[in-house]
Length: 490
Image (cartoon, rainbow, N blue to C red):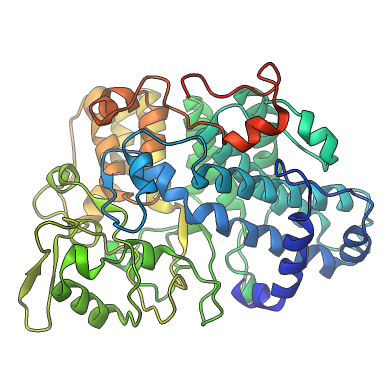
């Protein structure tokens, strides 16, 4: 997919410029009868390239997704001296004007706008002209469902837009209920995507959404909705699709081939010096002033990091260190408080700065914010643990332990046996915490399982803070609380 994306960078830039030209900074809208529609939507290749542009638009909101999925939760902290705004997310004092809210809102609505436009223009096209019509529809629906899934988990009720609308219509559009969005778009789109997406791709198409990605995401949606019967059914399908755990957990983050047997769906970034890589290595790499020159020097040597203008963000907190059992093979790469040099000497972090860092996103880097590290939206270990959870909630605890143990034993730990349903539930929650650190899961796990407030109230959380505030600029566009209210408490 990287090759395809490189070939259409100019198209993406043009689209972004056209979309940003709207006079209202609300839901990204563009009149349907424009030159962009006439030019871009004629041939199979036109739709193909527009679809790849939709994938590309996911990159921006996912650059900050860790702030919602991890930093907000208990295991991840901010020690960056260059970005104090992160502290407001971490400490539950986020401001309605903070850029991360506005950028995430607009980022996902750009995705939704682009998929809606594609779906509108492809629906009446003849399959003799658009040979891959059903697949393109399914891919666009998958992308749209993913965007809405993240929007409702972050903000709660949001405007439901399923076709391009005018600027005036957008400025009057209210917020739709979460249940409506799940039932009208997210679940419907994912069922359609599951039925029409291919199982695999080859060559430069690897990285696009597959049947497995749609099925796995649908299973996560059902789990989030506490529909454990449907979650079990969907996630079981994924276990029969040929995915397998890598024998070595650390290989997931070696960045030799991210499309391995455990891969299901990533947000793909482009390496190769084009400035289109991700920010993750720069975000989570330690700064000299917060880690000590010895640690930073060794990380540069080990991973081939040539530039240091990094931010010391996403640091594992002490309670995460304490949660690992002795011998857990995931601990060193997940949560580190130092680094071992070429002579086998351990160099600890210096006191007074960031106490720790994660190695999950450490990879070669020659240009700041241009990492080849992808963002893992869903991988097979995640599916196995969700499946175990669904089984356990459906009173199939013995079977649930089988799938929990697949992940647990991969970490070098002895299998569980003879646990009660409640004991198994807690072990699954713990396993997800240790397996999926800084992969955008912890906060949403706490919310969907009803443990957010009990876990986070000592960190400053109030009961209403299971969702984030709506960006203030969006409130001001409509300027009518009866139509477009702020989330309660903010």
